[in-house]
Image (cartoon, rainbow, N blue to C red; front, side, top):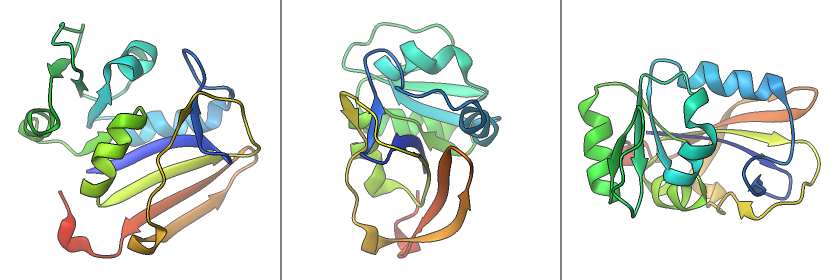
Length: 158
């Protein structure tokens, strides 16, 4: 599983019903990365961004088993991971904060875009132990810094 996220320099990933920035080239990068994959996201993230996804399959992790259009709903992480794996496609964890916190320990890679500047927000990307990860790729774009992190101990892959 891979984590994919955009955050500001102060770790903000959301403000209200969206992101407090507009960086179209970073969003296009996200759509390219998830094209043809399975994405795992929380209900709120699905309600905000789910309709835009280029992924083949959407798995929504939610305490509420209410159906969603175009996606499978699971009420616990194990069920969500099993459902996602059954599709046979690469899996991306796409947020929000609670989903990231639950899936970072299981991920083999993180594709993280840091939007330049600090932004106001009410939702944050969780802290992670940088000693467990190494930067395998880095690109400094005009409005964001992209880093692909790989787990140092690949024995924990999923």
